Image (cartoon, rainbow, N blue to C red; front, side, top):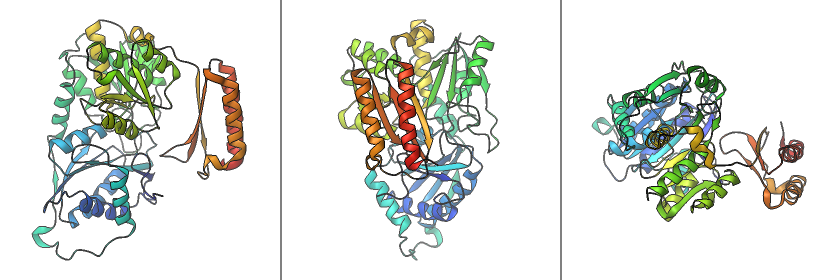
Length: 449
């Protein structure tokens, strides 16, 4: 069992295990050793979001990496997908993102990319973890000019901006009015310029990070204020990024939600119409609404489900030569553009479709008719295996029988927080609410705080 890495890197409360400077120092050493690709002087790129703890963690990682003879390229606050792109652009041997994504400011985390901008495999993460938890004897040969250096990269922002703009066929978004919520996160200084340089009118919200306000009542997990602003400004679209800008939730001109399932439906159909959807297949997760599956089938598109997590979507895409997939939460992967979820690039694709087809987002999203779906999050004191909780399993089985073919029940632990997530889907809203409450009660009795 892995002790550090979860489904999306390493996460925790900053300055508490495992997100301590001491462990980050050893992590930097391990990354340099494992991902050096046999080079005498490897290069590792580091970016971060806007959390105050990023300074502490960045320094510790840099020290560990340099102590192993590797150089560090520091790009400062940048979206997670930008780090994936820049790692490859700068021919670095690895890329590191210091971010806890959509989590509160007191948290932080580490995501690691290989030289091609892909998240690491489980096997490589295990190798790194082994070294971190069992530090090897210091290599006395690394001294003098063999010690690594840290370099600040000044043109990283411009590189990413130009790359993102080049992912759409229409080089002008003139005539489109956007309200953009940057979540006081990593894209605060990048995303506004991308949309403005393409000619859109952009009204920016939450682009003044102070180290503590990232994701605070803003961004993709809190779109309520964005909805109001879209209506007030009579905008065509609202775009809400999360703290590290690898996911996006949108709002149409009427202030209605447009989640990852709607985004995937619109984009998958557009790709198929342009003969650019590999194998006419969409890769989604077990959390996507059954309505998405039905909508895709009606358009001749197959839909494959994976476990929750964009890394599993990416694994399926790479393994079977697909090129598009995503999550209901807004992690969308356009594999032909970038090998990770990218909220800004996803928004660009939707804007491009709106422009090309001269249609409003509210019209485009009508392709998907969703079933009522309820998700409950429960704080837990421990992640006891669900299959070991008999009363919980019995309640889940009863719920599945009650819903029949017209519903689904999924109960799982979060990979990044001490939470259990219950998802119930069916035709009757009252029924699924009662089912979710019954399952919640059983879980609370077992592991609830």
